[in-house]
Image (cartoon, rainbow, N blue to C red; front, side, top):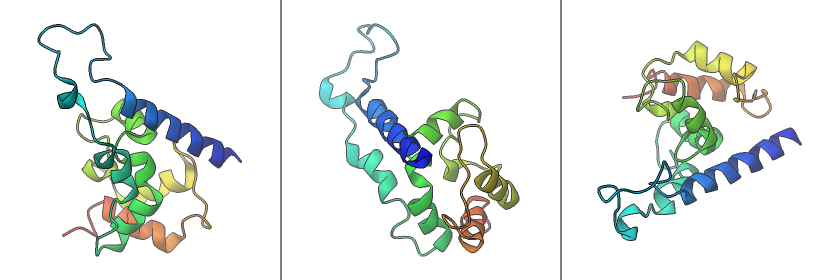
Length: 142
């Protein structure tokens, strides 16, 4: 039940971020004002991009990341938003991180961290987790 509520909350937050105008930080100045079409972000390149992340990859770790992790860690998402507050700029999406080790990824997935929930061995087997962790730690990348 908690996972369903977390999923719904993540979805609502993601949709709110998509709908938020680019100049939501404050009143627009003449320099910040742009035509509506220039500010529009197609949903296919944001939220839907996370759904299809890794689908065409030959790497099983990247495919599993797309299936199990991308919803929260790619595009306008809760995981990306929360990480952006704690990691260097440009590394909020997990594939962009350069400081991850496979052991760290495994520990966070199994034990959770801040808003990151735990994933059981039923949701993500040890073998699957190792593939994702190795891919994120660059061991599985070309």
